[in-house]
Amino acid sequence: MGGACTVRSSHGYPIPDPQCTPGGINPTVTVTLLRNPDWKTRCIRNCQTSEAEKHIAYDWYGIQKPRPNSGNRQVCELDHLVPLELGGADGLGNIWPECGPDEATLQNRYFKVKDRVENYLADEVKSGRISLGSAQRGIASDWTQYLPAVNRYCQAGGRC
Image: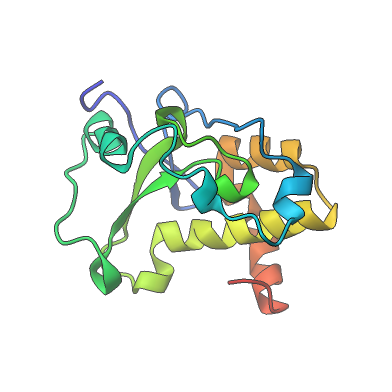
């Protein structure tokens, strides 16, 4: 695909190209499993696609992998569009390079903002306030649509 994918924008945040990163679901991950306090995403991480294989997504989007890219200097994350904690697949159709903004503090980089959306949706699914399928479809279509609810969730003491 070599640069054929384009990061788009919604509500001032990046969203992946739906032709390249449509999202993916792991059908073995159920609400019952997500509610189990012993279950961790490491059980399914890097099983379908290795960490090294995922780096092809940078090429697809025509983004040079930043170096260094860790700790407070991390500006990009190879992110699961549908997060593993919501039953997302670990395949390439669910991976995209979420980068920036470079000048923001680590906590305010786009991938950290999306992490708050993921936490919010996971809590909503586990509590039964939203179905797993609705959360998966919603985050895959546009993760930024949840930002107003996430802001309220964070102000109320959610996992932010």
